[in-house]
Length: 469
Image 1 (cartoon, one colour):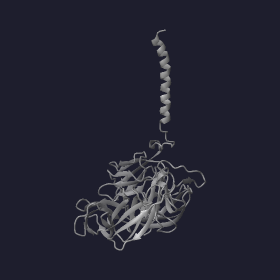
Image 2: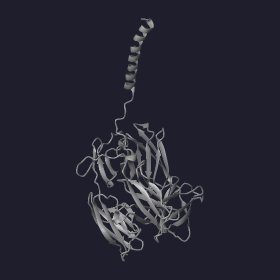
Image 3: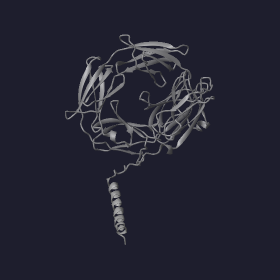
Image 4: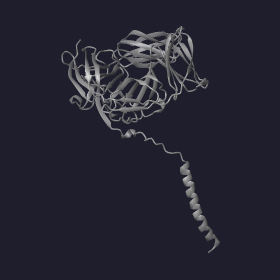
C-alpha cells in the first residue's frame, strides 16, 4: 500500500476527532439560553370588533374623525386606530380583555374619550357616539419682564371633559380647540412657577383671546451618595403643591438640579435600582429660594410579588399586565408585572400598589412592605354596570357623562368616566367589587346618582334611568 494512502487512513480519523472536540468545546463555552419563556406573540391575542357611527348634536354623521385606542400596552396587536367614513361609521379591532377606550379627535370639535360598547349590547349591532362642536382659545404666555415664554405646557380643564394639553411656541403663543363654557387653565414649565387661572369663558361664536404672565420659580440641588461615595444614575423627582412633577438624573458627581418650583413646600423622591427609595418633603423660606439636599441611599433586596384569585388560585400575569407603585404620589415603580428588576427599590414602609390586568378590574391598595417578605395580593375579576339614561320626557340623554367613584358617597376619587351613546345607553368597564357611587350628568337633562354594590364577576343592569334637573 502506498505511503500516501496509509497517511490518509491515519489523518482522517484524527481530523474527525479534532472537529468533534472543537464543536463540544464551542458548545460548552457558549452562553446558556435564557430560561424565561418568551412573551406571548401580540398577533396571537384574540381581537374584539367594535362598530359605531360618529354624529353631531343634530344626529348628522361626522366624517374624518380620528378614532384611536387609549391605554393599550405597547405592541399589542389590533387595528387600534381608524378614521370615520363619509357616513360617520367606523370599525375598529381591539384586544379582548382590555378596556375598549378610544379618543375621538377632529379639528373644530371637542376632543373626547369614551368606552365603546360591544356589538349586540342593548339589542343593537352598532352605536352612535356624539362629538360636540368646540370653541377656539388663542393664548399668549409672557414672563414678568413681558418676554414670550416658549415651551410652557398649557392644560385646559372643564367639568365633565378630558384635560386638553398643548405647548406654547417660540413666541409664547398657543392655539387649541376646547369645550365651550367656563374652563380653568394650568401652566407648567421647568423655568417658571406652576400657576392656575380660573373663570375663563370660551364661546363658539368667535375665538377667545387670552394672555397671562408667569413668575419664575425656585429650585432644588441634590447630592446623592452611598457610603460617602457619589452615586450617578439616580432618578430624582420633585412634586410641587400644584401636582406638577419634574425629574432629573444625577451625573458622575452624584449631583442633579431641578428649577422652576412654584411653592415653598416641596415633596421629593430619589430612586435607584438596588437601593431603597427615599421619599420626603421639605419647606423653603421663599418660593424663589434654591435649596441644597444631600441624600444617602441604602442597599435593599428585591421584592417578591405573588398574585392570586379570590378563590385562592394562582394568578399568572400576562406579558402586558402592569404594576405601579407610588409613595406620597411619587411613582417608584411602573413596569410589567413580570419585570422584577425595578421592584428592587422598595424598603420598609407603606406603599400604594396598583395592578392593571387584562380581563380584570383595576386594583389598588396600600400595602406595608417588609424587606425579605413576599407581597401577596388577591386580584378580583370585577363587575360591570349598564343602563339607559333618559330625560324627564323619556328621550335618550345622549352624550351624558358617567362618573364612577369608590365608596357609597361622592368625592372619594374617580375610578373612571364615560359617556352615553346617542341612544342613551352605557356600560362601565370592569369595576372593583364593593360600594361604588355612580353619577350621571347631562347639561340639559339634569343628573342622577346612586350608591351601588358591585359584585365580583357579575353584571348589573339598571335598566332605564331618568335624569332630573
